[in-house]
Length: 165
Image (cartoon, rainbow, N blue to C red; front, side):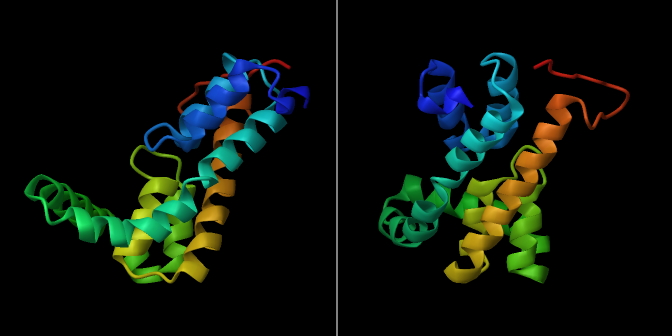
């Protein structure tokens, strides 16, 4: 786990990819293990921590920020789109609340993950004390799934992509 000492530019790239709203764990772990040549343990740890970093600021700031920005028509349209899309995609969260947030974040597919899970927790009124651990658990599950796929422990549709270490 020497990579954790920030001795490699790939560590920072992995951390930033995990923080980013589109790539999150789905991009960070494969990058770390293939391009960065990191062990699965380092890739997992750096990616999980990086993916969790924006969660609390999103949960704390999305309400006040959206309220202030919605005064501007272009921002209001964006938040209307974001919240309507979140409501459409969030049937699981609407029904199961914190457990739904966890499951939503845990599925490592496009447009799921910590960012969307945090927005959905806000939209559906999941209390912060339940949303934070639910998102953290979802991140751990998603990180495990992605790591297992990248190491080849799980394969889909006959595709086997082991990473040698």
